[in-house]
Figure 1 (cartoon, rainbow, N blue to C red):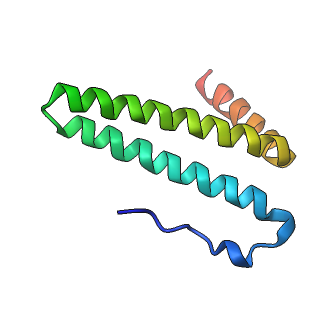
Figure 2: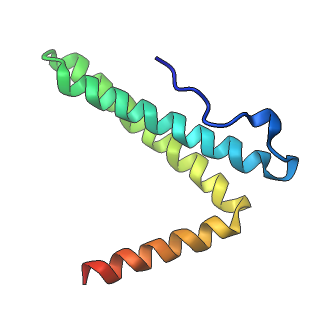
Length: 93
């Protein structure tokens, strides 16, 4: 049930490899969040639900860790995230 890495990292240019590794790690963590939250919604056992949601929360922290690293090395990503934030704010006014 593991996701396939969306790109072949062996063919990525060396100067882009770290960014692609971090993006792939983010995808994997988000997949895990979705999986754990979906399973938590399905189970009737409150103990299992509690642990699944706790683990999902930890995976969200991992997303934040990888995203922080990505933003340290990809300045275009920083700029585009800011543009996205501005667009949402404008649309929601």
